[in-house]
Structure formats: structure tokens, C-alpha cells
Length: 134
Image (tube, rainbow, N blue to C red):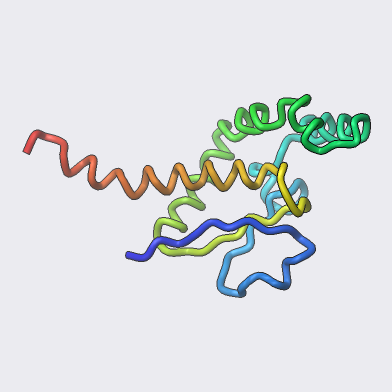
């Protein structure tokens, strides 16, 4: 069994990415809002970015990562993350697409969360095999 991959990308380069990858748009209003930051988080971030003129400063001040991770714990987000992880574990190549070119961006957190789920899927059969002491 060949394992797929989770890559990241940004919208301006969409045409440059391989055709054999599934493109998953992870920004608000593009069909996957369960994988996007909340409107409140995005608003807080943009306000702080404008005020401080620095994306990392805004990211840290609004506690972006912890708030985004908390949102990803909701049932709908968890279902979608697990669905993508299953596809990747079964060989699919996916690319998470957002507006931002570089970090900080929530797609890098999503990539990590999906990767953790892929690991659980791939390790689970070995854990079951060892159950029962024999």
C-alpha cells in the first residue's frame, strides 16, 4: 500500500500544482468552512495585523494557533480531517490551498492535524495485532 501526501499551497500558484493532487480550499467561503478559521478569529487577526504591521505579532497576540486548534475539535472539523486522513492513508495526494503564501497560516496546522490522523490510521492495525497477549 502506498501512502499519499499532504502538501500546502496558495491560491495565486494554483495552476502550477500537479493535476493528480486533490486541491482542498481551506479559506472561508470556498466550501470547506469547517477547515477555515472562524470569522471572529480572522477578524481579530486582521485587526491586529493592521495595528502592528506584522503578521507574526498579530498571530501571537490573538492566540491564533490555540484558538484555531480549539475550533478544529468540533465534530464537523474532526470528521473532515479524518476523511482527508483516510484518503491520504490510502494513497491520495492532497494539497491544502489558502490565500497566504507563507507562514503564519492555518493550513500548516491543518497539515499537522491530518498527519497525526494518518499516523493513527496506519498504526492502528499493529496495535490491534498485539492485543490479547499473543
